Amino acid sequence: MVRYSCDMCGRSIIPEEDVRYVVKIEVYAACDSMEVDNDFDEELTDDYDYDDEDAMDKIDSDDDDMEDVEYKTFRFDLCSKCHNRYLEDPLTIKSIRRGRFSEN
Image (cartoon, one colour):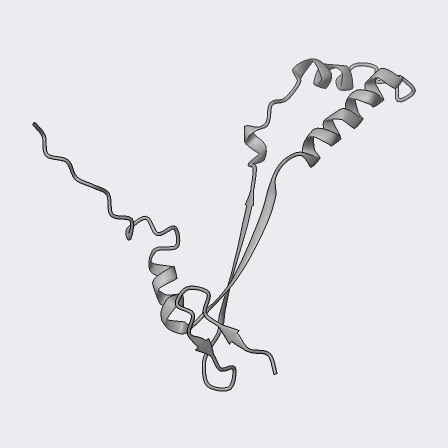
């Protein structure tokens, strides 16, 4: 029998009695933040020669750069109580207490 526990509070989740919620998070670089080589784009619009080895090497190096982009996934099991708390503040922005300093 598979046993589940809430990843926030640690409470056991019994499949026959409790509802189990799954949270999946993906973290990756946004495509709009990547630089585009305008010179290379102009080469593509001009008479592009697929036999040109320099151009093909440049395409291959661009593909290698894409593989360096960091991609992470996370998966969490939550009980119904923690699920509700998570939906209210998914990034825990409200629960972070910031110190207030007096104006001197």
